[in-house]
Amino acid sequence: MNLFDVYPLYNITPVSGKGPYVYTEAGEKYLDLYGGHAVISIGHAHPHYLKMLGEQLHKLGFYSNSIQNPLQQELADKLEGIAKIKDYSLFFCNSGAEANENALKLASFHTGKSGVVYFENAFHGRTSAAVAVTDNESIKAALNNLHEVTKIAFEDVNALEETLKQSKTAAVIMEVIQGVGGLDEASTEFYVKVETLCKKYNVVLIADEVQSGYGRTGDFFAYQKHGIRPDIISMAKGMGNGFPIGGILIDQNIPAKHGMLGTTFGGNHLACAAGIAVLDVIKKEELMKNAASLFNYIQKEVATIPQIKRFKGRGLMLGLEFEFEVAELRKALLFDHRIFTGASSNKKLLRILPPLNIQQEHFEMFFKALRSKLKNY
Ligand SMILES: Cc1ncc(COP(=O)(O)O)c(C=O)c1O
Image (cartoon, rainbow, N blue to C red; front, side):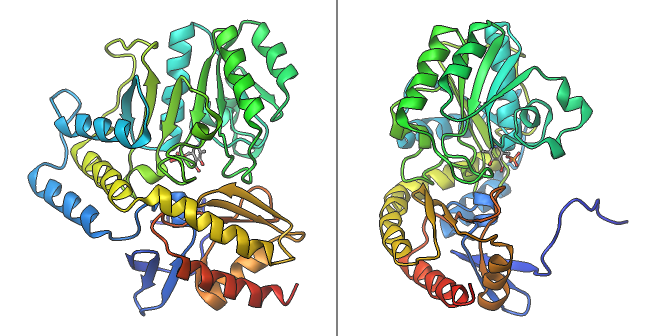
C-alpha cells in the first residue's frame, strides 16, 4: 500500500537523535536547527524525558478521561508556576489545530456568536475552523469555507473595530509572532488595542501560542512581552518534545459545563509524563534564559552578515530574511553542511527553531556554513 502522497520529502532517514542532532543509519550527523517544526523543545532523547516516559509506559500508558488522572493536575500546577500565569484552567488535547478548534468552539459557546476575526498571513492549523482562519486559500476545501470569518491586516485597528461593532464576532485569534507566515510581530500598542476592543465588544481573545509558546521566545508565552491577558491560550508543539500533546488555557471567567469539550486521547498518562518531563527540564536547565541569551549572540552575528536584510523573531524563534528566495540555500545547508533549517510562506526567509537547550557552539557551526554558502550570492 502506498502512503497518501501529501508531503514533499527529503531523501534523508534519521533513525536516532541526541540533543540538537539527528543521525541516519549510516551514522551521518545532522544539526537540527528546525526541531521538526518547532516541536523539539528539550532536545532529542533527553535522559529525564526518556526516564519519565519509560517509567510511565511500564506503569500505565493510557486510560480514558472518565477516571482520576493525577498526572493532569501535576502538569497543570507545574505549567502555572513556570509560565507565571494565574486564574486559568487547562483542557488537554493532542495537536495545535485541535487546540485552536477547541478554543474557537469554546468562544462560540461562551458568547453565543459564530464569527471569527483572524489576521493576514496567519496559520492556525488544518482542521475545519482552524483552517478557515488560516490565510492560505489553497489548503481550504469548500467545507472549510462555510465558517463565518473575517481577515484583517496586522495593525489595522479601524477595520478590527468596524468588524467587532457588528456584534457577530465570537473570537479574535492571533499569533503574537507569526510562525508559518514569516515571523512578523505587531506593536505592543496594537496588541493592547486588540485586547481593549475584545473587552468592549464581548469578544474572546485567543492567543495561538502553538509555535511561539513553551519558552521559545525567552518568555514562556510570546504575548507576555506585551502585557496583555488573552482569554484563551492555545499550545502544542514544544509541550511534549515530540509526544503528541496540546492544550488550551481558559480564563476563569469562561465557565465549564460537562460535555462541552471532550477527547479520547487528550491528557492521557503517557502524554502527561512527556509534558511534565518537558516542564521539569525547562525549569531545571533554565531554557528560557538560554533562549534569551543566545538571541543576543545571534543578533550580533547576524549584524555582521550583509546579505541578511531583516532579522525577525525573538529568543529561538527566528527568521533571517534575504533579498533572494532561500530554497537553494536551505538545500545547500542541508546537503553540504548537514544542517536542518525551515522555510515559511515568505520565500525569502530562513526559519530557525532549534531545541531550547542548544548552545552557542552550534550556532557558530551554522554561521560558518552560512557564510561559506553566501559567497555564492
Ligand atoms: C501557530 C500555529 N498554530 C497551529 C498550528 C497547527 O498545529 P498542528 O500541526 O499540531 O495541528 C501550527 C503548526 O504549524 C502553528 O504554527
